[in-house]
Amino acid sequence: MVTPLNAPRGIRVVADGHGSPTFVWFKRRQRRVARIRNIWRIDDEWWRQEISRHYFELELSDGTVITVFQDLTSRTWCWQRC
Image 1 (cartoon, rainbow, N blue to C red):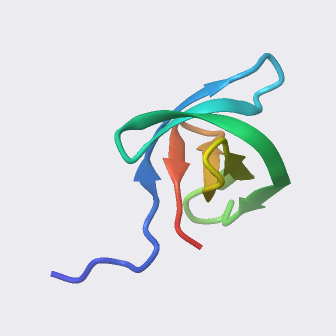
Image 2 (cartoon, one colour; image 1 turned 180 degrees about the vertical axis):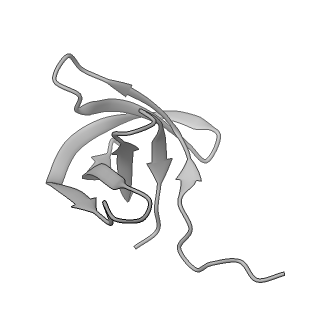
């Protein structure tokens, strides 16, 4: 069986009223988002299977930097290694 590189994994996220992450559960621990380093959106492949994602590069309270996105079609959150 072949596993795609950098495949997204589900992650629990608490977001504020504007949709920005404030807490994430990463490596079995709840962590506070200290800073949002970057935000971008991808809308693509409407002719096949629609992809609509809102990405956030986050700096967590312990200094860890991760990238998460919200799938805007399913409203689920994922963590993706970059």
